[in-house]
Image (tube, rainbow, N blue to C red; front, side):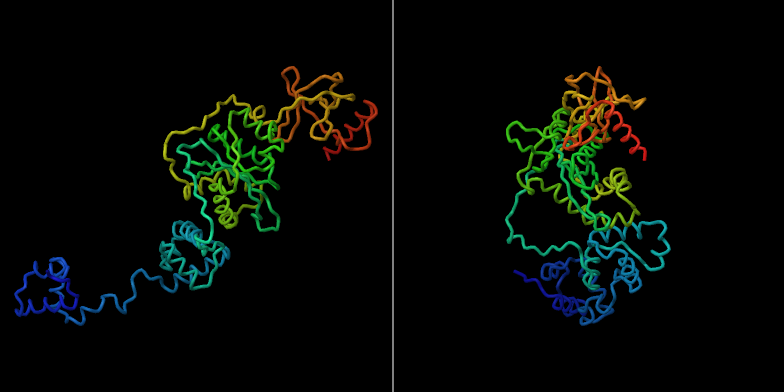
Amino acid sequence: MYKILSKEKTLSLLKDKLDGKSSYSYAELERMSGYSKRHLKRMAKELDKKDIETMLIHGNTSRTPAITASDQEKSYIINFKSQYPKITIAQFKDVFDEDVIDNHDKEKDVLKYGLKKRSKSFFRKMYKDNGWKSPIKRNIVASDYPMHHLRDAMPRRGMLIQIDGTPHDWFSTNEKYCLHLAIDDAGKEIIAGWFTKNECLFGYLKVVEIMIKEYGLPMAMYSDKHSIFKSKDEIEGETKFQSIMKRLGIDTILANTAQAKGRVERYNSTIQNRLIVDIKRFGIKDYDQLNEWFNSFYKHYLNKKFANVPIDSNDEFVPVDEKFDYLDNLSIKVERRIQNGDIFSYENCYFSPINKETGEILHITSGVKVNVIHDILNKKLYIKRFGKLIPCIFIRETRLKDVVDNKKELTSRISDYIEKRKE
C-alpha cells in the first residue's frame, strides 16, 4: 500500500526522474503522491526552471493579492460611511452597491478610485478595522434562551396576513409614529404599511384598503390581542375591526404570544433598522410623503431583497371589481335613535344630519331609528335614509353640562360651528 507523499518528497522524486535517477512512472507517482498526472507534469516543467526550495514557497508569498482593496478605495468607503453613522453591515453593503457601484452618475468615481463590489465579509472587516458599530449585535448565545419553534409558513399567498403595529421615531425628531404593517405569511411579502401618530383602527383600515385595491381579499388576518382586535367581552364581544372583517368574509385570528406572529415581528425589526437610513437616502420629508412612498416604492424595494417565493404558486387573494364600495365595506355601521332637537349620539358625542347643499339641519321625527355610517378612512359621519347618504356634523360631547334647550339655540350653535370650521 502506497502512502501519500508530502509535496517536498514528491518534488524530490520528480527531480530524480528528470535526472534519470528514478524509474518511477507518472502513474506510480500519481498513486504515491495523490497529485494528478497533469499536475505532476506541470510541476516537472517548473523544476526545469526552479529548484525544489523555490517551488515549496507559495506563489503568492510576499505578493499583494490582486483583489486587495487599495488605500484610495478604502478612503472612499470611509468617507461614504460618514453619511450613515448608524447602519448595519448588510445595509451599508446594499447602499454602497446601489448608490455608488451601480449608479450611472458615479461611474467616474468607480474608475478613479478602483471601486468594486465587495463581499459582506469585506465590509465586516472594514467595520472592525475602523471601529464602526452596527445597530444590530449578534452575540447572543442561542442555548441561553428558550427556543420558539416556528410553524411552517402558509403555502399560498392570501391564506394568512399578519398585521402588527410598531411605534418608532422614524425621522429622528424625538416624536414616535406607529407603522401599521401587513405581511403575507407565505412569502414574507410586505402587503401594505401606514404611519399614524398612534396605533389605531384608522391605520389598520388604511392597510386593509391598500391590500384590497392591490391584491384583493385574503382568507384570514392574524394579529395580537390589542383592543383593536380583541373585545373585553370574551363571549359575545366583537370589535369594530372584527365586525368589518366579518362583513368582508375575512377570518380574524388572535395570537397568544409575540413569538406566534414572529414573521411580522422580525420584519418590524428589519424595517426599523433600515427605514431610518432610507428616509434620509431618498429625501423623504414628512409622514404624508412617507405613507405614499412606502406603498408605491419602498415595500416593493424591500420585497425584492427579502420576500420568498411561496411553496404553491396558486393565489388565495380574491380580487374585487370596480363596483366594490369601499365606503360601505370599510365603515362602521350602527343603529341610533333620533332625539329631541334632531340629534343622535355616537361615541359619546351628539351629531345632527344636515342638507349638504344648504348646510341646514334636516328634521327627522324624534324616536325614529336611523342607520349611522362612520366612514373612518375619510373621517366623516353619515346616516343612510331612503337609500341616500346624508352627511352629519358634530354638535357637542354628550358629557358637556350645557344643554341645548330648543331648536333655535341648536341652529345657532351649528352656525357657530360651521364658521369655526371655515376658519
